[in-house]
Length: 89
Image (cartoon, rainbow, N blue to C red; front, side, top):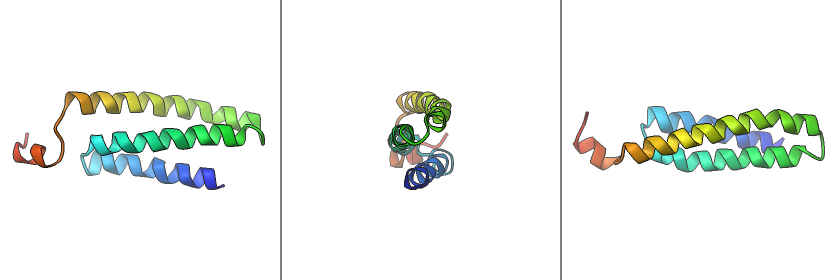
């Protein structure tokens, strides 16, 4: 249950960081922890229920793709934070 709770916290943090705070750079750091929590879920569930562990795999793949998109957004749209506030779009 702890692995699920930790994953839920990281899952719930990403969207507000990316969209509400408009900080894709912070969301990119956070998505690393989200991804790691999913790997921990897959590994932790494997000895208990292999089918349940495999059911997490599509979510892990989706977060991997989302992390790649997040990285591309950060790379193509720097800077964020104070410098971005000086030059509003």
